Structure formats: structure tokens, C-alpha cells
Length: 284
Ligand code: CAA
Ligand code: NAD
Image 1: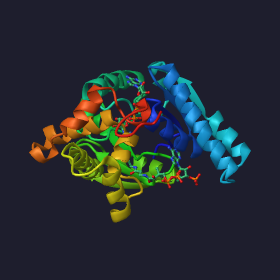
Image 2: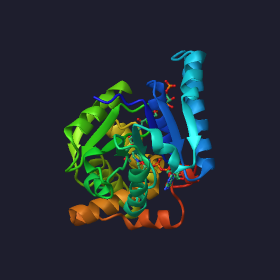
Image 3: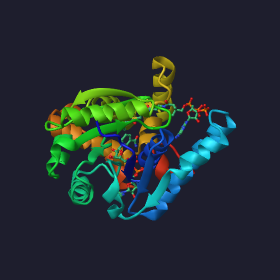
């Protein structure tokens, strides 16, 4: 079986930077690529801050932190993927934009390289169809915040090979994560359930069932959720939440998945949650 040693992560936002951190912490070399160099630089800053906290809490030594950072390099040129064993894509949740990227990656990356997507909801089978290696395309769905959350949902496209699946399952274990295999359906398991709940919480706010804090407190105190659904939506990013609801609605065809108009309105206003400074809550 191939020994995955060099990876490229595409998208240096909250997910891509977290993935780069856990890959480097597991001893592999990683290139963190973003079209916007300011984003990958910001991502590296977040990684550094996480590692500083690990050193302060004595979970890691200074030498370990330095070694992890030394394994990460930044890039804004896709051609840097010409020598990697694997790519994990974590760019915007949009099929058209992802398809353009996968077409380019298929031309640039070595023949043996696996092309994985961290998509939250989009069809892996369709993403794979934009390449000439659909057997080497797979979904590797990390949870936010990546360094903390144990789960990786692994999504098999219709043409994903067993070999690719086993390599990625093994990689997840090397990162000290728990892989769970699911089939390729809109939103997989995680977001079919989670986002439907979040969307329902937005409807509760929209219909005036309760104030935002009350909705969140009910779910925290009543159901032991670590975060209320509206705070969690802000944390995920409201643009991503809306994109996932659109995929569920279109892909499953049931009106129960219709995105709440209030969610659409917030995204249209540029209130994307924590990352933009305002969503259901204010972060400035
Ligand atoms: N990056 C790295 N580490 C982080 C972090 C981040 N962004 N946020 C928190 N942590 C760490 C903290 O450092 C802390 O560790 P130490 O104290 O040991 O240093 C630990 O997590 C706990 O943090 P806090 O004490 O500050 O706060 P908390 O106990 O409320 O935990 C949380 C924070 C882990 C985020 C928790 O609130 C939680 O589990 N929230 C729900 C997260 C969730 O549901 N994630 C899934 C989102 S959906 C998804 O990812 C899929 C998708 O496609 C949309
Ligand atoms: P984000 O907005 O924080 O970051 C996206 C990054 O991708 C930005 O830095 C942007 O500059 C970059 N980018 C956009 N187009 C690019 C391209 N063509 N080439 C290179 N870089 C490009 O988004 P995020 O929250 O990190 O989400 C990224 C992906 O991960 C999405 O597919 C999302 O659905 C998925 N995901 C998100 C979460 C979450 O909780 N936010 C959880 C699991 C999976």
C-alpha cells in the first residue's frame, strides 16, 4: 500500500488550516494552498496559536511545535501539487468552483495521487467525474474545529476503489481520528441530520417562537449540546449552512429541507457568522 507522506491542502480557511495542522502533527509534510495568500497566512497564524496553547498546557514540547510548523509550507500556486501523494480540498462549498479545481488537479498531480474533498454535502461521485481517476477520488469530511473533533466521515463515491478507501481510512487513524464510512448521498449522515436541526432553529427564530439566546439555551441545557444551534451555525459559517441546505433540498427533493428565508437574508447581507464578525450573534 502507498505510504502517504506529502499532502497538499487547498483552501486555507478554518477547515483547511485545521486539516493542515493535524496532518503535520501526524508527521507528514503539508503544503497549505489558497488562492489568496492572506488567507493561508491567516490559517498558519491560527495553527501557530493552537500549538502555542498545546505547549502552554504541556500537551506538546516546544521542539514538537517547531517540528510541526517546519513541516508546513504555504503556497498560492496549484503547480506546487505536482509532487504530492494526496490532495485534500477545503475551498468554498460550490460544485462549479470545486469542479474547476478538480479538473486542474487531475492534470497537475502525479498519477498515483488521491484527490479527496472535505465537502460538507456535495456528491463525491460528481466531483470524481471531473477527473480521469474517479477510483482515486473520495470524501474526507472533517469536523470543525478539526484539531478537537474525533470524527472523519469518509464518503465513498460510486467509483471509489477499495484501495483508495483503505488508504484514507488508515490516514485518518494516523491523525488519531475515528473514520466512519458512509455512502454518497446529499449531506451524507452528519449534515443531513445536523443542518436540518440548525435550519429548524432558524425557523424558530424567524417565526418568533423564542429569542435567539433562548433557542440556544434550550438545546444546551435541555439536550446537553455543547453549543446552541444558532451559535453553531455562526461557527460553521452561514454561507456554508445555506449551501448545504440547498444541496439537501435539491438533492433529496423534500420541502422539509427548504432553507429558512431568514438564513438566505443573512447570507445576502454578508452576515456569514463568526468569520465575518456578525451572524445570529455579534462578534466585533
Ligand atoms: N481550534 C482548536 N482548538 C479549539 C478551538 C479551535 N477553533 N476551539 C476550541 N478549541 C479547544 C480549546 O483549546 C479547548 O482545549 P483546552 O482547554 O484543552 O486547551 C477545548 O477545545 C475546549 O474549548 P473551550 O473550553 O474553549 O470551549 P468548549 O468546552 O465549549 O469547547 C468546542 C469548544 C469544542 C468548539 C465545543 O463548543 C463543541 O464541541 N462545539 C460543537 C462543535 C461541533 O458541533 N462541531 C461540528 C460542526 S459541523 C461540522 O463540522 C460539519 C460541517 O460540514 C458543517
Ligand atoms: P472558509 O470560507 O473558512 O475558507 C475557504 C477558503 O478557500 C478561503 O480561504 C478561500 O480563499 C479559499 N478558496 C476559495 N476558492 C479557492 C480556490 N479555487 N483555490 C484555493 N483556495 C480557494 O470555508 P471553510 O469553513 O473552511 O469550508 C471549506 C470547505 O469545508 C467547504 O466545502 C465546507 O463545506 C467544508 N466544511 C466546512 C465545515 C465548517 O464547519 N465550516 C465543516 C466541515 C466541512
